[in-house]
Length: 235
Image (cartoon, rainbow, N blue to C red; front, top):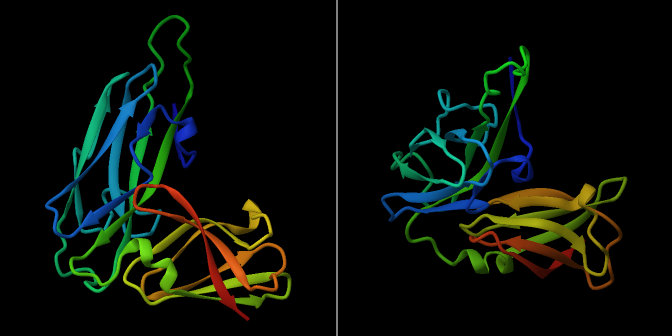
């Protein structure tokens, strides 16, 4: 028997997670995340949080969180709620959001014993990974207004164009697509990214800059919704 863990996304998973991200307000004692097994067989679930290194596992994670239960069995048609508790007061910046990652590893059952049961088989474990945003108390502004306070600059990279984002706010700006206004986004070039709180980042953009210098950024909000917004850019 061989077990392989892969990041395949929810389309290949039997367990559906209620959300695409987790926001953890510092004033809350804990937050919860629900899951439902939509498959026809029981699933074993392991959950942990990492600090941004995808190679971190539950036993090596340095993230200041506890998840209960860390492992559980979910029968077909049943659900499970994960409780997430922050344990690292003082270990993260208090003037901005900090990004962690929640991992959910789904392990299918072994083939049933019997005459036709295979002697050798491959067990495919599906790993889902989503952002967990730790949000300290008293941050100035709001996540919905953060994009309006970012600054964008378009530069040539020799083969095309990059968009440099400067974010002076306390909130991370996550987006699903980035394109020049009037130019369709090309997923292979401009698919997804995040302009970090009080930081900078650079992203490739397909096509040519338009005369008005505007970019279209499809922002992802706290609830996983998509909101296309226009922003100005300089050269």
